[in-house]
Amino acid sequence: MAGLTPETFLAVAEMVAGHLRLKEADRWSPHVCRLKLHSFTAEFPEVNDPQLMWAAEKWIQSTDPQAFHRFPVWAELMAPLYRTEGGLANRSWGPKEGLPKFVQFKPAQMALLPQQPVSIHAAPDPANAQAYALVQGSQRPALPPADEAQGLTDEQWRAYLQQVKEVAAA
Image (cartoon, rainbow, N blue to C red):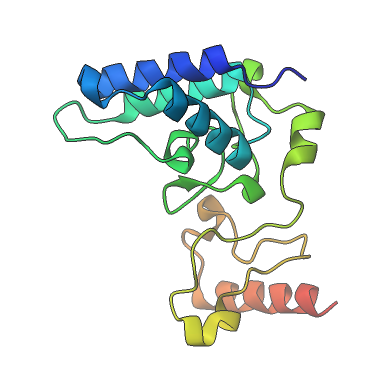
């Protein structure tokens, strides 16, 4: 598996900086570039050159040209590539479905992802954090897909929730 090269990382950083119209004095120094590369690869070790370039271009295309933007945090920049939580990429949730073939994750990259899904946000009520624990181990989603849920009667919802409860208890 080819990893991320410093040349590609720097090219993407320049591409984003150019899009943000950063003045020359605000550009990263060579030392800062090395630190930023290390920071990025520590947070997203599985990302390769085409994936970073594709995600950065998608991020650039999604920004409103009239609005003020700052340099994105890594989880913002990688949001086009990963499933997101609160608009930020969550590595533990894996890559998005339907990615173009050239940026799809290879098995070696998938092996680098966390094995257990974890929320990147703290519980809304820290004193009651257990109430917000992720449901794991079930093969059935907690709720039906949105296209199936539309138009369900109260009785159909009760039946579905009872079925989920029985599956969870098994």
